[in-house]
Length: 75
Image (cartoon, rainbow, N blue to C red; front, side, top):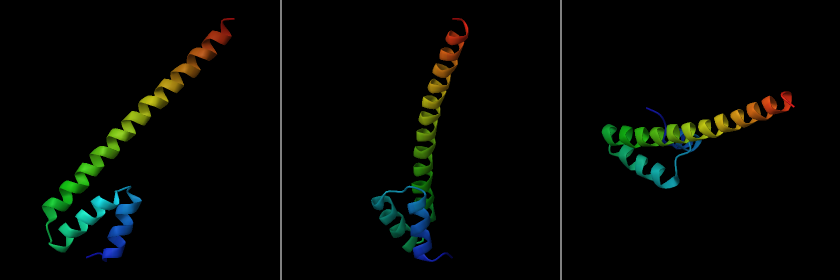
């Protein structure tokens, strides 16, 4: 079993909000694995959604650079 401090540091590193960390620690102290994993799964889904949104933005920039280079070659 990990020490509480290590768990908190890990949750902070994962970008969890203080309110979510507090909630998680309550679940941890009650040994409620189901609620712990539900909270972590929810945060993971949020991070994946953010990742996909950023990937779409990168794709848009890459396309714009491609189009600009293509336009410059044809001039």
